[in-house]
Length: 194
Image 1: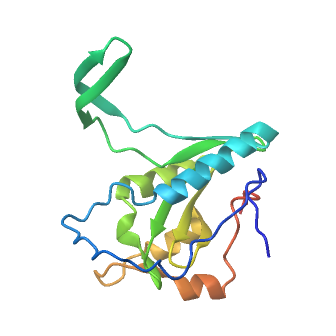
Image 2: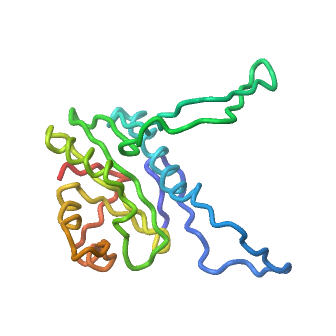
C-alpha cells in the first residue's frame, strides 16, 4: 500500500534491517540529544506548510527566546552567533489558529517501544497548556513512537490524568494502553478539537 503525505510527497518507511557493514562501526563517544525529535519536527513543519497553503490552518513553530551575547561577522553578509543564553524557558513547540480556534501543542518523540516517560514534559509546559485550556483554547501533545512509526495526539485533558501523583514514581504513558484505546489520530490529515 502506498502512503503519501497530504502534499503528495511519497512516504518512504525506514528499512527494517540495516545494510551490511564492511567496516567496523565507530564507537559512540558522546550521547547527544541535540537532534532528538528532529524527524517529528520536520514532518510537522511540512504538514503545517501544507495546511497554510490550503488555507486550512495557520500554525507555526515558536522560536526559542535567546539572549545573543557574542556575534562574529566572517563576511559582510554572514553573521555567526558564538555565544547565546536562554532568556526564559519556552512554553510549547507550536501554536496557531485552526477553524477560528487557538491551538497550542508540544511535539515529543521517543525511541522507547513500550511507553512515553512523562519526565520528558517540563512543568512550565504543563502550566502553559493548562492556561491555554482555561482560556478555551485547544492544547495537546503529539507523541511519535519512532520505533513503531506511530503518532499519537493526546489532548491536554487526557494528559492531565497521567500527571496526577503516583507514589513519588515517574508516570509513563503506556504504548499498549494508548493503542488499545484507539487513541491514534493522524495529525497529517486533520486536527481534532477534542
